[in-house]
Structures are given as structure tokens and as C-alpha cells.
Length: 69
Image (cartoon, rainbow, N blue to C red; front, top):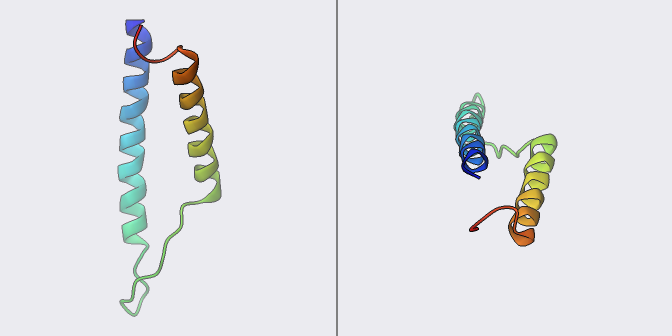
């Protein structure tokens, strides 16, 4: 059980790091050459993966595989 918790902790750390990189890329690309801001949307592939991971997490919590023993 401890290995499972450590695995998800590592996965969360990777997600936070990826979020920081995506935020930096979004901020760097958000300015147009004339100085105005444009809206930067999340790419479709990343949105799909995040949605699937959310569903897997919810399924794990509701089935009892994740969470308190």
C-alpha cells in the first residue's frame, strides 16, 4: 500500500512539474508582437488525457482501490 501511495505522490509531482512548464510556455506565447494578449487554449490532446486521468482517479476512489484503508 505504501508503494502505491508513493507512486501516486510521484505522479502528482510530475503533474505539478508539467503544469509549471505548460504555464511558462503559455505565458511566453501569450503576447502578440504588438504587445496585446491573446487567449491561449489548452491543446486538445492534453485536455483529453487530463479528463481520462480524472475519470480513472474518480473510479479508483469510489471503488475503494484508492483512499483510506
